[in-house]
Length: 116
Image (cartoon, rainbow, N blue to C red):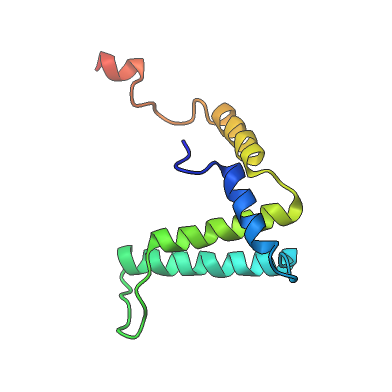
């Protein structure tokens, strides 16, 4: 489940931070651009760690964890700016996936595994 903070608490924390500034949340288009930029930075880190492309000596050390954190922040900003509860969005998505994909994958502890 959630670690130290619930998603609702994270959304409130980000909102408290952003609310300190006159500029407030970026526009949806700017948030989308920022999200895309952060996805690119995550892709670069994954490529450095698991792909053939190594980092240049001049490139700063970063981590997949740091890039995922950046993405999470932007997602929370986007949700907050649109008045979306990420708890509710996540619950709806999990219900959809658990229903739609219920029999799509082979379960680890299926009866067939025990009969082999």
